[in-house]
Image 1 (cartoon, helix red, strand yellow):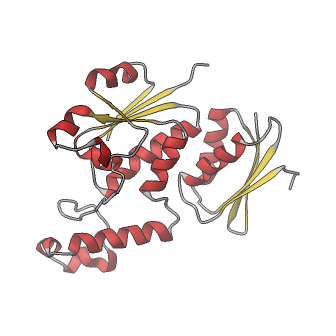
Image 2 (tube, helix red, strand yellow):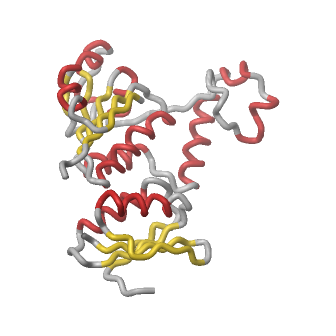
Length: 159
Length: 76
């Protein structure tokens, strides 16, 4: 049986949305898939050496809030300075308490398992990012290179 | 419980870490050897079943005992 292939496009740069691409790619690799993640636009934040990923309840009524905050705290309150940092801190603590891996760990596991991480060259140029900001072992490519792999893939996800 | 060659305690770890750790440990083992995985993540029951089916490593035993899940996996 030929090796199955998983192709993912990661477009989001927040702490919560950083999980699906890395969880799925690392798990697929453990199941014997050849896996590739193409990071574009805000997804490029997930390739930074120093991750500073945040989570925000703004514009996200589905986010569970501690202590029923969503019931008695107006949405406007969430825009207060420091609120995003506080929510991010609480989320990280909750993840640690529940034995959920950090993004850094999952990213390392992906690289160990030979998941190919590809940065969108166009976005790197667009946002004036420098390759020195990113972790080692990644590639830089464009849409055509993504299709070369995605066209052969068994599963293709846009996250 | 049957004999095993290696043991992996994945207690307290959540998806997908038990699977990833198990895969890593299996990589260092020889074909035919048995890995005993202990986990507390209830999702790991279905996950190890699926892992076995997709990788060909036989899940010889899967059971719950005192809030912990035990898996015996024979490396293909």
